[in-house]
Length: 270
Ligand SMILES: C[S@@+](CC[C@H](N)C(=O)[O-])C[C@H]1O[C@@H](n2cnc3c(N)ncnc32)[C@H](O)[C@@H]1O
Image (tube, rainbow, N blue to C red; front, side):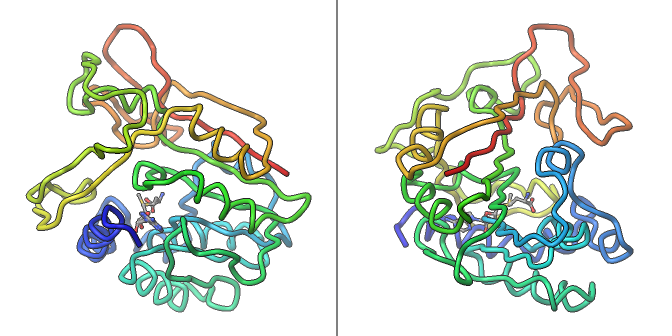
């Protein structure tokens, strides 16, 4: 694992137990039967009955297991944080899903073929590639694990949104659109957890900006074709301070002004 990923892994191992206990993730509601997937990804992925699904960067597994609750016959989550894999495995037992949900520790750039590969769906969402230093390796992992007639589904922050200061509603440009190999975006220790602002984090992070050409290019280089590209003017969490949650569970801007894309969804197949 490279140095940036080692730094990020430390951060995720520190925050995972905080996330598991947070109102933000609401594990109690999941254990009571709540499905943690949003309407956007449920509609895009469609019926998973009887399918095998691989979830990359699964965190502690609530989204992964939500696919099992929707009928997937086997779900496998991959995450490089041993704390996340431990919490996910424990939660699968508590939720009575251990027979269909399995969690594997691994870096998504290096994990290779998981459980024999051949997955009908490879899924990743909401807080993913900003943590990755090499999308070509990520693309290879996806291609290696996809069934011949399967598809990859991606839903995450739109790279245009990631250029702006997330702490300001007036769309202040703060970051390059383009990837910079030599300079990851470094967050020093001492930040607070997005899931619990009372928790001050002792570790720092190295994040990466990935423009569309690099995302699509990495998947194309791995032999995949992109389709069903979708851009959304709403968020899956409070992505800018002026946003408010609506009845559909998504967050909308309240301040007047130009609309920018906040989420990006797409699929890829062989
Ligand atoms: C924001 S979370 C995943 C999103 C999920 N929607 C959620 O909130 O539950 C990001 C996850 O990516 C994992 N991660 C970051 N870099 C990784 C890597 N190189 N390989 C595998 N997992 C990684 C972290 O450990 C974390 O669990």
